[in-house]
Image (cartoon, rainbow, N blue to C red):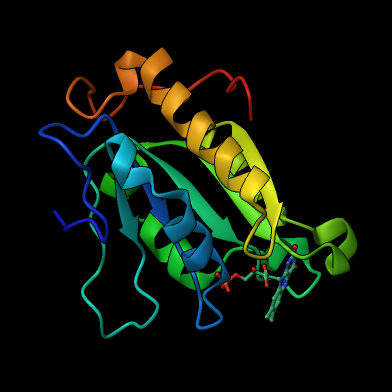
Length: 172
Ligand SMILES: Cc1cc2nc3c(=O)[nH]c(=O)nc-3n(C[C@H](O)[C@H](O)[C@H](O)COP(=O)(O)O)c2cc1C
């Protein structure tokens, strides 16, 4: 099992977020600004380069991904994210998705969220543009916390790998 980039403060994590960000680092900046570790959330980063050790997550998580199809919704998922989710052990712990993108891409705006939601059968919880606004940060922080607090069956210490995710998140 991999170590979080930002480990939850306190003795016990209440949930986790996994994110990907390319060299432009917009999503990385967004995640850093959310300070989720201060709220008891482990934050893991999917590696950018194939030479880095693969990420292995074995606790329930919400994934945060930028869209990279260049306008083609079928190609919206970054290969690194595809590789991570194609590992059955990683995939079994996903509980929701938040997507990022750029409205210049029209219909393909944040299409990565639609793909993950459909393929993994989890709620598409929120979307934001580029590195997000302070309002986006506040909503994601609250939404992630509410999700793990309102769904204790998804909390880090009380879930079996094949629990089915369902429902939507209030406030996001
Ligand atoms: C080559 C390329 C293709 C992109 N394709 C899309 C797209 O199809 N839909 C979308 O909403 N955003 C698209 N974007 C915008 C990115 O999702 C956006 O810049 C995001 O903030 C990048 O996050 P990152 O810096 O964390 O990698 C694209 C960006 C690039 C550079």
